[in-house]
Length: 168
View 1 (spheres, rainbow, N blue to C red):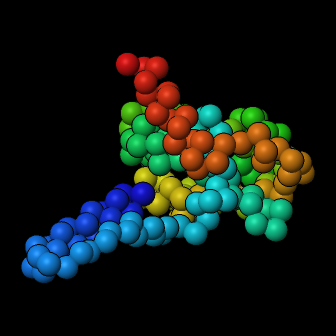
View 2 (cartoon, one colour):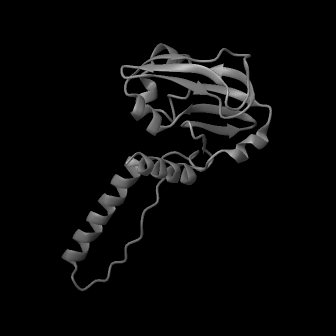
View 3 (spheres, rainbow, N blue to C red):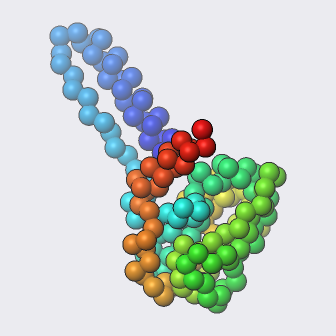
C-alpha cells in the first residue's frame, strides 16, 4: 500500500513538472493503479487481524500489517503442527514480541498441511514481509463456505478506520 501511494505521488509530481514546462499543453492525469501483490483481491481478513488466501482449496494464513505493527518486533512464533485439525476461530498458535504476546486464530476450518519454518526460525519475517515471506501456516479447507464470513481487503480497511474512531 505504501509503495502504491509513493508511486502515485511520484506520478503526480512528474506530471505537474511536465505541465509547468509545457504551459500550453493540456495534460490529463490518470491514477496509476499498481498492485504489488496480486493476491490482494483474494485475501480475506478476520476481525482479529488474521488473513487467508486460498488457492486450490489450500489456505495460506498470516497476520495483517496492522497486527504486526501493533505487536512490534516479533521475537517468537509458535505455529500449529502439520496434521492439526482446526475450526474457524480456534486458537492454534501464538506470537510474542518485545511489547506483547498474541494468540493466532484460524480464520477458516481445515487441516494444517504446512507451517512456515522460516518464521519459526526468524520471527522477524512477520514484521518485514507479513503478506509474503511472513505467512504462518497452510491448511486444507474443510468448509470453504466460511470464506463468505470474512472481510475483503476494502471491508477490512473500513473496519480498521471504524475501530480507530471507536478508540478516540
